[in-house]
Image 1 (spheres, rainbow, N blue to C red):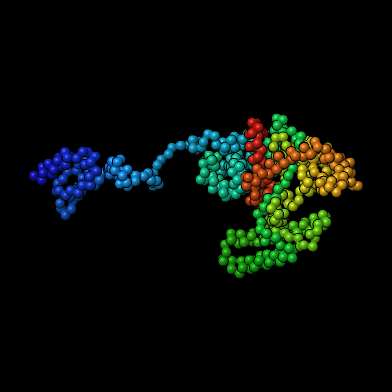
Image 2 (image 1 turned 90 degrees about the horizontal axis):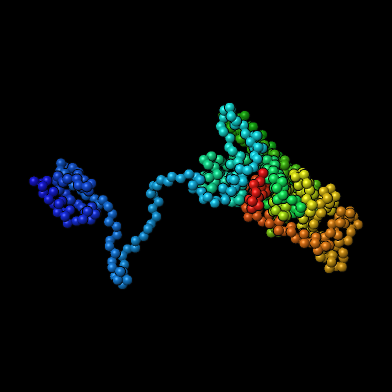
Length: 499
């Protein structure tokens, strides 16, 4: 009897409501023996009786909107909005190559690196066929990562490692190969000689294709902030005190180790002893830096002889230099030599001299050593004014120097002839003075800014603002990496494949 009554009532419900309206109704029916219909009613036994409970199966959505004339009259309902829902789990099927745009710049970087000869790195790989051990990391991958990171202004190895975990272009380069910051940092800092060889390889390939002629080469330097604080510079007297303190600390550590051998593990003891040895080494190098500064002051007859020479215990190779904004900070002097016609960097050097004076002759020697040919014209600004350098470049390399004469306008205003031969001038120096008098020479000198200053500006835009490493050897690797990155991208503009 109960079954028939329940069936009769349900038939009336279905007859009075359409399917979706019926399923969307928040039913609350409690009838014994009710059947389970379309998954809406659920049987539950409560104290020996069958209780039928219902719940909404589908969301009916918002109520019907009022007519347009009612909404216009100012009587509106609740706004219907699309809101973000971040807990929805989705599954995407795509390769790394499909996730990266076909015209993305990182593809061009990988293609350029693929054309380079990296045998200098491959010779150092110890994992070879037939020998057990973990596979090495492809140097093309590490070089491509650093080249693309340089383009993007990423200078930190730790930051580059984070980029490889979270950003698609770096993940595409890695292609599933895991890298850590230690591997990236070692590849860059320990590969200065290999990067130098690679720079020569790239420029030599462009020379062979007649895209770089070395007809005119310009040089300029820029000060890059060192990774050392101003407070790390100490006088010789203070460095002597630091060395004494370091020796005493080593003795204290030894005594503690002998008194209680169980207090520290062997690894902790070795780590502390190594830290103290490194501290002593830094102090010793800082004292050598003080001696070097004093010697250079004596040779240059500097007016700062009365000031005590300072050395940094953080980066002994860094020197306090006058920066472009007029302030004095620890820095390095990065020198680039650029082919004027092509805009390719043909020479790189990093020095700790605060002035460009005396940097022209070593750069011309470097270009000659790299490519076996000297530039025909060499363009530098007045900061490189060194008569011995002019004599060396003009005589030994038969290279014409284009450099403005010091205080030219002042001498002309005073009625003096700045182009006249000086008492101590050699024939080469006198020829330079005479050359710079002509309008043609001044027009050639104007080409310096559009090449040398242009390269410096590009490197600044790529975050060559502060050295991420310490020491002349490692900072030179930074300069070489920027030069190599610039040349690879520039060669792409020239529509050639380097190497």
